[in-house]
Image (cartoon, rainbow, N blue to C red; front, side):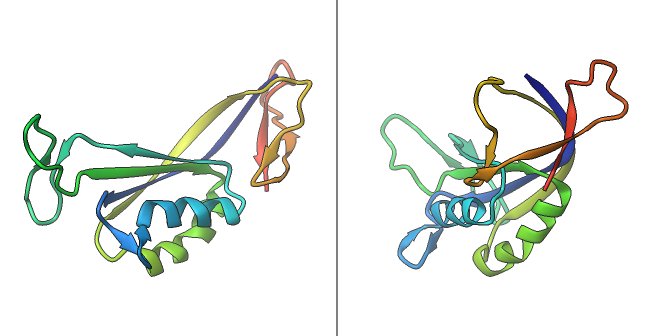
Length: 139
């Protein structure tokens, strides 16, 4: 089954060494996104980058790895993402957040029930769809 919809992509840019209560900040953000019922989160490790302090962090064969960049990407409905933003105000002390409108296509085995954040997902038909298969995600 092919499910199409519109949403918002939240990208959180932090450092790999950023900590929240003695644990990696990225773990706490992912945990809270899951708890909030957002569709999914992915953490990507960068190999080189710089941020607000203009210090280049990089991986070299013989160097120590120093606070490499991380991106946490979450895509969900606009309402779901915007409801999650206040949690980032509490968690992120240094970093950047970007929001981008997205169109998504989700491929799913029709024999399996869709689940978002541990609960069944519901979809409403997209009236602009010619095949009646696609739909916008409803939270």
